[in-house]
Image (cartoon, one colour):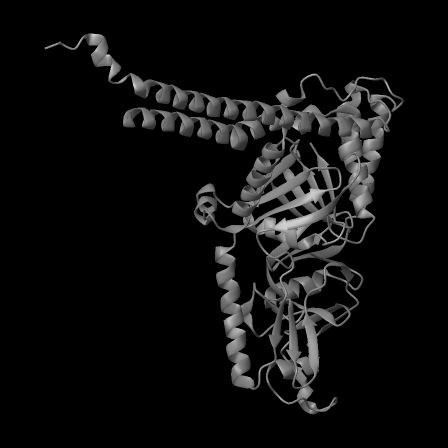
Length: 219
Length: 276
């Protein structure tokens, strides 16, 4: 009697397993196969008025050229903020690539000083608006708040720093820049206040290749 | 003394037989119920697929008839036209060429990132569509309606300003260390719902062994997703209703690139162009 009970139980368990495997694996596989769509056709095969092969190929060629025309022929830069990597191109030729540092995606809040500032590198296409060697950095308020220091007056001499931005800077609008850094061990990380930091040699190559008006693609 | 006959001896056990038969019937009935449910569910599932194709065909009715001999050329034309439409916008778009096994991010017509697809699986639904249905589905950029991902799409943290310079230095070091650690353990998988009734799944895989190591049964985004699908299936079985069928395109690319694409695409109405 006990033996029979176990036989029945085994049969039910096998049945349940069969059912579960059908529902979880076999039926979804059937849905994803073309077998489920036998007899249905999307009705191609007409001879619609889309033109002949040569005409379409000609149109494809034109569209291809139109699309290629979007790529700048002069120097341009692509910045991957997720990987903190940059690529310097001239036309379709990759001139240089390497690590960079980009915005830390952080909101700095000081309830005590009633202050907040968002640090991020904006996505999209920007242009080099100005470029200059030996940049001097005027420290903004957030630099003091972030360092736990008191904020000096707007024209206090302590605000002016040389060397912090490296040998060159390229301004890309809204206060964002491409510049060098003294914090080399943090390169390749999302640690900046929105600017794009490069290593010295990379910065020099970028500075020499990119003109005012050159595009910077940030994603 | 009267001796017991063989029949009388058997009669001692005869009372047990009806019970055993009853159990047998119950087991048989359970098996039949399983079989019936399986058949009904299979039928409903296949109907759902056919309904989905019906919708695609209905959309195709609005497009002109397609000459099958010119299909490859027309497909290339549609692909380029679609990418040009994306180029007209200011935001990043995604272009997926399953013929060439390439996935690329495009910004203003410029390819800013290109990656070789490591593996890809496409629902039979897409292998079956051609002609008008193909152009109705892939002839123009698709719009992302919803993102779901195993990692934060746009990670943003709020930091309280430090009280002094020592606290500031400690906070900076801790943040850098944390970022390094997070990078090591991230398992990148994301899925989007597209406006033409199908899903695009992107899986970050650097190596299959690594991906398997990171998958923890009972935890994480992929498990939750699978569990939700299973629950849905059983709910439909119990209600005898048609399960929802969503065709899928699953693409495996390197983990860093899967993450970069997820973060680059705009949260609202991002565009994707696909060539199959």
